[in-house]
Image (cartoon, rainbow, N blue to C red; front, side):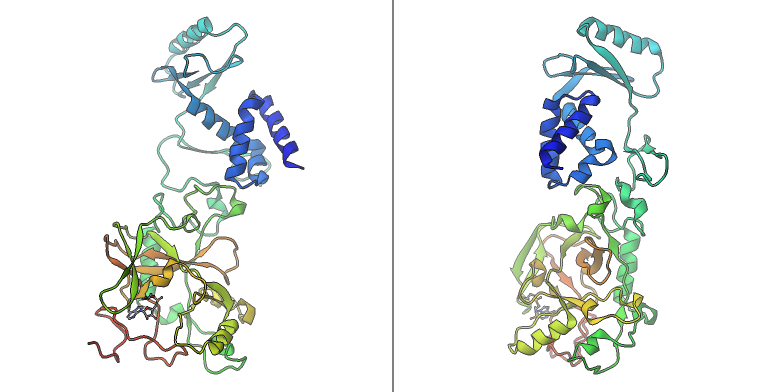
Length: 409
Ligand SMILES: C[S@@+](CC[C@H](N)C(=O)[O-])C[C@H]1O[C@@H](n2cnc3c(N)ncnc32)[C@H](O)[C@@H]1O
């Protein structure tokens, strides 16, 4: 259906609810901008989003006419009642006596035009309401309501559909227990955390010939963020990485021979998202070929997307992906390495696809990071390995530095 007819259809549906076209049209236009012309989100649940947006826009325009503990009557800024046809009285559920209510209705009747119809809408203080938590999967709707307090959970209906619980706090930080288990796995990789492929794509990437045994891959927990199928918008608390960088960051010249580095200009709490590691998504075989062609000294350290290789019998070459930031990248390029006690950790985050071969590698703080402190990440380099990319001499300054061979001067 062309967009024009869709707008007309939406206006018609809203007219049946008592909203005139002149109120509906600008709200539809705003929503289309917000949802990038995705009509599906606007139409679903009988235009639920649209009704909410219209109510929001009306709330902004009106002010209290009179209030009491249990009754609120709206008027516009000129003191006129908001609608000639509908006058809405919002009531708290526990209306203690009909006397007060009657008083308000009488007051209204004396002020309202005779054509007015008084609609009483009983409205509880509602912190979280979902019309149908089954999202149409059951024959009847089952609603969810919290009138008591602000939820500790993130207000998004998609939670139940995700395999795992939300990994974020309402403040957008990675939850303490998720972060702690992730950190402890990163600090001391146990044998049972490692997965060894029988036919390792990394070894195979060397011109198709298996050159050695699999050195093991660390299996990692994923964060699953909401995506376009969830129906929530970008404000949803389960969309942290996809909203992008929010911390105030600065690239600076390090004083300790590491070249440029990245630091934060404000205190950042533990579990905060800093940035993701961006690079070209290439197969390991492609990377191998790139490295052969690139004879210069300038190498980057590709990030292997191997967090879920254990779920496959054999990972095919086209599934063995990594991020190569040597040509295209982002601010993460400036993050220097620190052995073991770096203040960032890379967590696999699934956004666009449930396919675990491709994911975002998002960098979160492992502890509180103070303003002007350098932010660092453990690249996972084995300084004693004969890696095709020659490792640098490490100046991380950590007492756990793994580069024991380097002469620190
Ligand atoms: C991803 S870049 C980081 C930004 C880099 N410092 C720059 O000036 O562009 C990685 C390079 O930084 C340097 N580097 C990173 N961590 C280091 C460390 N702990 N000690 C010495 N050099 C380091 C190495 O030259 C490494 O190849």
